[in-house]
Length: 133
Image (cartoon, rainbow, N blue to C red; front, side, top):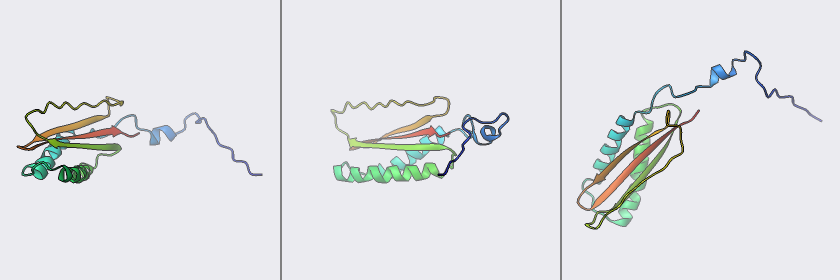
């Protein structure tokens, strides 16, 4: 038989928590910079496009990957990213409202959002940044 003894409670004066635990982000998530990335990517990809369902389905994948890569280039430590893109047909009867609800820590978690439209389509891009301790 083999037994392994594990200490479950930290010893008094143990450096474990002070060495590895950070109570909050060292670098804040740059919402304004990410908003500019969203505006730049949506405008460059969709400015001249006309709405076609299949094209927009592919564009949501492409745009979300580009946005995720551009935000990751900012090298913001310890944030998990969620990128959501929605593209729809613009018509005179559009009365669309988009909402989201998140359970997070308002002192460290945040989001960036940008809405775009041209003559035939609209797009909404959201980047949610959740701090990972």
